[in-house]
View (cartoon, rainbow, N blue to C red):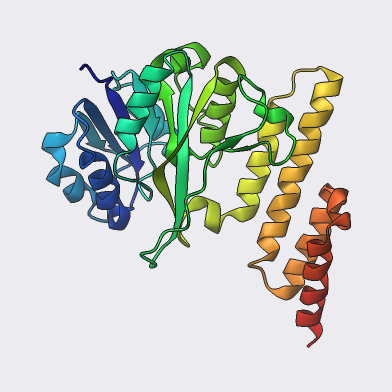
Length: 300
């Protein structure tokens, strides 16, 4: 039985303390038709030695300075030859059996643009995983994810695998002007033109740690995510109103999330900005509970 080749691109920079687990999670899948490409940005933390340890199992690797994660992903894409393609952040990892399930699903649904499974969270330093979070996409596909509404989808990059034909049609790249949501922008492109198949199996683990880009840069992440909806505007007034509403919602969510970790005075200001961006949260009980708790923290 001929299994489709799966190409995995792993961009990395100074994450040697996570990189080996990411590599092992790929190489121990026992999937026979695998292509692994590691693009390291010239790390100075010993990552190169870790990569060299597995070099005989890699199709290609390099360790030279680059222009960031998106550039590294694109360099890796250029070396892929597989029928199924994805990229894995070096601080995340796959769960056993993921690749076989991906291959089985692609063979059942050859027309699909992507197979997306479930994922788990892991807080760094804690060996336990969160319960599996299943993929969700309301209304089926193809679809324009930039139109919302909030909660329309729950699809994570660590559990997303694309078909080569889909990437070749929508653009075989991630945008290098994006630093946080390049994965979502690619997903949006694919979802507009292809059906997406969802698997109930958990494919990967997204690691939460203080140095991760999304954890340490909450407001810049929210700003870029917000702009992603504006980038999708087409000039059609009715649809663009929905995209602009989603842009405001994403910024509001960013302020709200920032309020969870900020000092009380900054948290209160962030909560007020969240409501300015997306006034609908005024009607949510949890918002006012957070407001009162924050005010109490300031004056206690």
